[in-house]
Length: 190
Image (tube, rainbow, N blue to C red; front, side, top):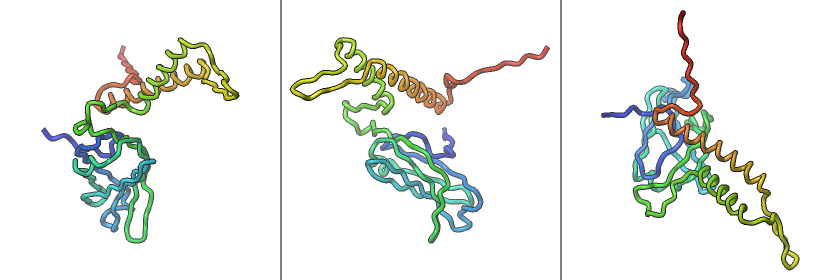
């Protein structure tokens, strides 16, 4: 069974996997006009450039091999899609992409949780720990330390719970399932 090729850069992928997608652009940036497309992925760890592998008119295909993607550092990258030709570079689109760890080559201690899930878990651990202590701040030998108030921790936890629900919904939709934000309406004729 052959799966259809996605028509946009994925929102997430695993390092060490083979990934292919196509991108269609306005006729101003067609291959017939001498343009090629290039993605620049950037985060604090560095930059990754992805050039199209095949072009046909306004449709460009990007194919990443396992050998190439397994060298990529995991993290969230900002991407910019450029239409380029000699002496010209035009921004076509921008977004974000999460590169997840290569689970096939990873050791058993690999943490595959997203940043949002890790932060939510850390906040919940802090809240549980705060239930056992009662000091918001203290001072020893002229040095002081202040902790976040329990109200602030609860507020941040609620925000990250909402972010995490959005992540789970996005994963469901990507797998072809209904997200929790789907509202079904049925009209009946009388």
